[in-house]
Image 1 (cartoon, one colour):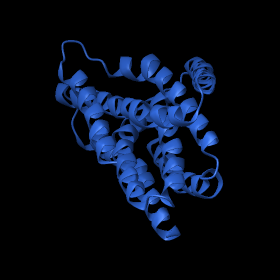
Image 2 (tube, rainbow, N blue to C red; image 1 turned 180 degrees about the vertical axis):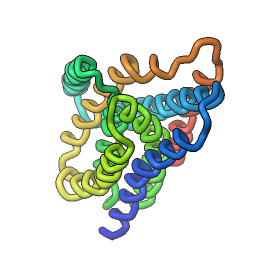
Image 3 (spheres, helix red, strand yellow; image 1 turned 90 degrees about the horizontal axis):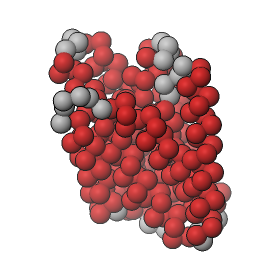
Length: 235
């Protein structure tokens, strides 16, 4: 059973690295053109839609099931304020890591939830792993672009993504062995992540994905959210 959990969470995490590899191939093997620019921004908005769906359909509802109103308010505001501080620090240093932060903010809590529910509902855990994996692809694609633009080398960025891909297994094991009997802690983590994610979406990711006189980009966000709806209905 433990091997299955490692395989499920390993798949979910592997797409972080795969998304980075695909982004590298796209950047270096597709000629610069208006179409390439539109595809990049559409993928950014698609990733934003998926992140928003994770927040609205998974993280917040699961946290609300367990916590009181004051618990939700406290954790959500703490997440938003903390990531406002982190974002201000990154802005002063010239970094563009918002997409990476947002990806990890939903990837890690969801992986912990994956580990927590595995012992109870293995089938749900499998579908959740697929959902997390699908989320990570466009998010890591966009994160790769942001990190390279902020000054990271391609090699260093791919190494970072390779290391981050194992966070899914680590988080799932933590959820399975440490937090499965503490639903309150898991719920606080999910709501905390939601506050941070929403701040990053509105402040950095959504504005960056906008293109003037282009209507495909916002459609990408809608399609990304639809992926989340379908994934949640399958779960």
